Length: 76
Image (cartoon, rainbow, N blue to C red; front, side):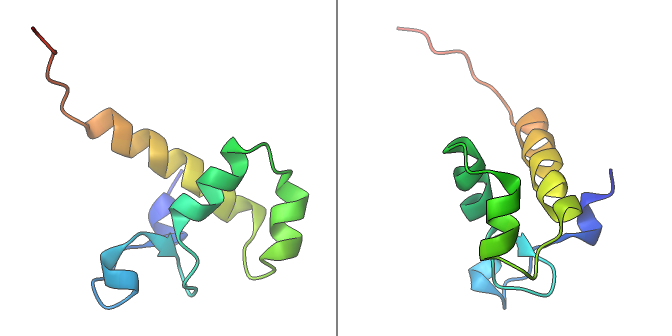
């Protein structure tokens, strides 16, 4: 999925926090709502500027960020 179509990272918008393109809605806000088991229809009702594809893009983006993360094993 081309999540770049739905997610913008711009230092002039929300200090560079990832937001949905054309909005000031942070991606992490919607991811947290999904984690709280909020229904997608409810999210779309609360944020009418979003589309279902944008929410799917947020999930894809989160997966990409985690996939690119460098992991350092913890040793004691």
